[in-house]
Amino acid sequence: MSLDTATVRRIAALARIRLEAAEVERMQTELNDILGWIEQLQAVDTAGVEPMAGAGAVALRMREDVVTDGGIAPRVLANAPDREGEYFGVPKVVE
Amino acid sequence: MHPTDFTLAGAAEALHEGLISSVELTQAHLDAIAALNPRLNAFLAVTAEAALREAAASDARRKRGEARPLEGLPIANKDLFCTEGVATTAASRILAGFIPPYESTVTAQLRRDGAVFLGKLNCDEFAMGSSNTTSAFGPVENPWRRGNDPDARLVPGGSSGGSAAAVAARLALGATATDTGGSIRQPAAFCGIAGIKPTYGRCSRFGIVAFASSLDQAGPVARTVEDCAILLRSMAGFDPKDSTSADVAVPDFARACARGVKGLRIGVPKEYRLDGTPAEIAALWEQGLAWLRAEGAETVEISLPHTKYALPTYYIVAPAAASSNLARYDGVRFGHRTNGTDLKDLYERTRAAGFGAEVKRRILIGTYVLSAGYYDAYYLKAQKIRALIKRDFDEAFRNVDAIVTPATPSAAFGMDEKQDDPVTMYLNDVFTVTANLAGLPGLAVPAGLDHQGLPLGLQVIGRAFDEETVFAVGGAIERAAGFDALPGLRAGL
Image 1 (cartoon, rainbow over the protein chains, first blue to last red):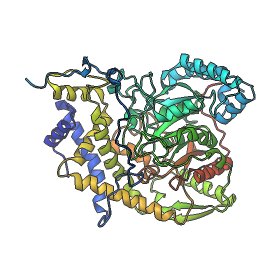
Image 2: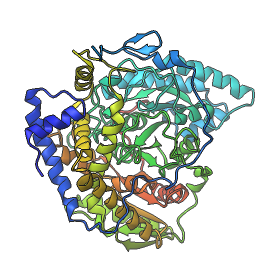
Image 3: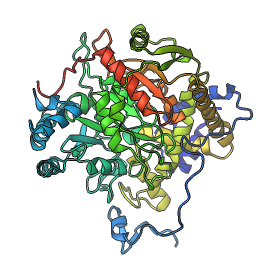
Image 4: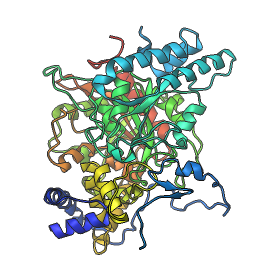
């Protein structure tokens, strides 16, 4: 599988990373080199193998469904690039 | 003896005996940083005032007879660990201005045990790299140099290059680091020091900037195996704030270092004999096995048949996780923002300006392998091969107690080398990445020098939660190797 420039642009849009026109071609070459190298995995027989999601315990721990944190809005907001009162500030989304 | 020449264990003893104070020890390291960091670029931030204040408080505490395990020992933290009130960057522009309002569990535990923090250490951006050249704040220089080409500036390895360079050059007694595919062990080997990636789940990931959550583990780097063991004991332990933290007792790792290897069966994986491995690395590996046999271990050839698929598997699993983990950097809640015409434009411009080239590559690869139509062919396939890689180890560990391999396929290389294409750089982790995929502990220990006078390391891999055997084998290699070579750039000269 080889990525064309349209696919590179689509992936970048999905990842919310702006690529300038001049970057698209270089990124296309680099991504195709990496994907070409990864392609060798298709040769491995994985019939009947359960996928492994993590290296830790198979079952996650349960805990009581209670509030353990909160009430720290000023600390949560302390690093915000823009804020209005107790809210993060962003450009207008709805006209 | 210069105070920066102490090992961590030696400094603890000297403090205990009153031969030196924590303030003197800390000041000596701050002086060393001031002298050498402009060249090495290992520290991104030096918290000198706080360190001296902590050291003075530590000396007072010791006088009261209340010394803790790491009382007054100056160490430093990879800038991937959130430190309350101290800027944390992950060596990325996108975290510009971020001051964590909380402390990572690992650093909190080191503080609990009395450690003094000197500052924050450079690394590859978001821990993505094997040469520390992807840092937004410039590369770190390896304090070692080639005997036959002393002017060449070498990489310290990565991603924990600042941690390894700082400890090798004696700017800190030890340091925290993290390892997702080799980021503790490869820089430790390149800088002639020891470093351990413990079992997945051993150290809490809470407050560590995430890269690939099912692979990331914190661990120490230090100048001896015993020093790593001492630091790991403080770093490790169950933490309810990390859902994958293991509720397993933390043993006294340091006691295991001198245990010896008599009667142990050491596995030697035949698939790690790669074409193109320098002869001196193959010879050092043989030498290491001979040392262990001389101490009463038995060496056994084993097979880990899926080894050659580990790196390409990693380069699906890790970027997929990264594309998800790094989605949080959106210019809204913390860090850098580039304004845009609307919210989507703000996201895209913020991330374009904030992330470096390697981070963008990995996010895009990860986004692609998780996207509709490709998920099964790439991501699910990789997860299945990951299961086969783990199965290889499970079967091997039925017959052996530990596995010994080279730590890296080469010694430290020049800053201008291997930068042309990403895959060449990725091959650095060929011997280390398997332990991350399988969740196993891996230790790098310096074992010799190459023909250029650069350090080479061996790696010890153990069963899950059996770091003690790993330390026992590493300790035996360390004693037999008697590695006493020193880097050209170091404090106290």
